[in-house]
Every structure is written in structure tokens, then in C-alpha cells.
Length: 283
Image 1 (cartoon, rainbow, N blue to C red):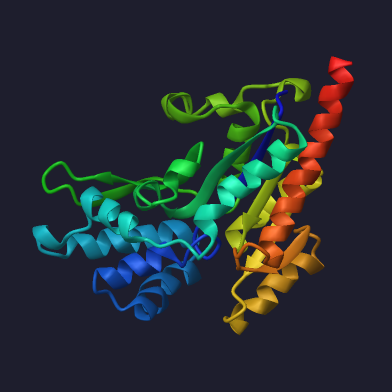
Image 2 (cartoon, rainbow, N blue to C red; image 1 turned 180 degrees about the horizontal axis):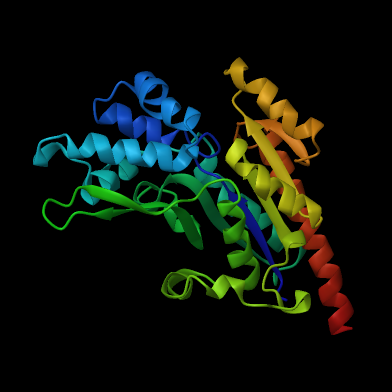
């Protein structure tokens, strides 16, 4: 066990506007119609929502002329254009400073676990802040480089898999080379980052398993919502009623906002616990 705090974020509607809907709009696709007429019928037929939207994107891309298809280059280009919510880019150093103010030996690491598209998120301007990023990935055709098939799907309980990667320290190339490594048994006292050293931040149904896992191990989970979108308020409030989250807060990363303040207090609280343990062991 090391003196590390993990702050794990969802991406879409948590750190930035929906990157997938933004991409579809950028491609000239009627976004409401895509979700309503292309994706929803698959879900009603029993599809999981995430592979449903990935499949429809592949299907759309294959119908286009070669120069208009969705390629890795186009996904990366869109990712570079993405703008996170105001204040997000300053949040990471702010949270690191909160831990360092308690004890300079305590480290904060950031992770991204999303049902969005990995190439898009890895090209985003804040991508360098994350120790690792897990999201959906495509296989690409060898002829024109268009998206061909989903090779990684991250949805619902799939997201919890990556919390175990974080806990066990199975990251980067090791995680990619050996997908079964995450099943390796690691005693609780040998975990790199136990779940009770984690803060999880998300906004939607795909985050519920992560909310529950972190909360059940005495970690901290924050649900966020768009205060301008009243349609989502009831869903977000349900996270509180079900005990899924520690707090429910509007998406606002301004310096003195409720969300930023709660994140700072969460990191400070965890840092104080780790600092006490450090003093006990060193003493």
C-alpha cells in the first residue's frame, strides 16, 4: 500500500460536454435523430446502449465515401478540438496542492474511465493529466482506415474493472498486454491504491456500479449534474436517494464552486488519513 490518492473521472458531461454527440454533430449527423432513430431501437431490442451506439457509428461510416469515413485521424482531430468545462484545466494542480499541504509525501493521481471513445479522449488537451485512460476503442480497416468493429467496450460494470486495475497498479502497457492480469489476487494490504483512497466523479447510469463499489469500500463518490438540464435532475437525485454517492453537485469547476470545494475537501480528508498512517509507521 502506498501513499497515493486516486481521483477517477468519467468524461462526458462530467469534465466536458458530451464528446460523442459533439463528434456526431461535427460529422454532419443529425444528433437527436441518431440517438432516437438509430440507437434507441437497438436498445429496445435488447442491445446494451454502448455497443449499440458504437455499431451505429461503424454502420454510418461504412456508408460514406472513403474520404468521409470515421478514421483514427478524424477521431484524434476531434479530440484536440474538445474544450473541457471552464476551470477543469486548473483543477488537477489544485487537488495536488491540497494533498501536498497536508503531507508532501502524499501523491494524487488522476484516471479517466469513460464510455466515450478512447482516441478522442487521449487527444483532449487535459489528457496528459491522467495516469491512465480507459474508454471504448475501435478496430480500423486496413484499406482506408475507417472504423470497422468495437475492440473495447466500456459500459456499466465494465467500468469497475478499471477501478480494480487502479487498485492493483496494473496500468499502461502491462494492462494492455495481459487483459487477464486484473484478475490476479492481491492481498488488501498490498493494493497500490485501496478503494477507500479513491474519489470517483461521474454523472450517469454507466457510473452507478463505480459509485457503489467505491462507496461500499468507504471511498468517496460524487454525482454531478447539469443545472441547466432539468430532464436530468430526477435521475441525478436518484443517486442520492439510493445512497450511491456521497454528494450531488452541479457541474461547475470555478475556484470556489461547491464541486471544486467538495473535491478539495475530499482530497484533504484522505490525505489527512494517509498522513496519520505515515506518522504512525514512521514513529
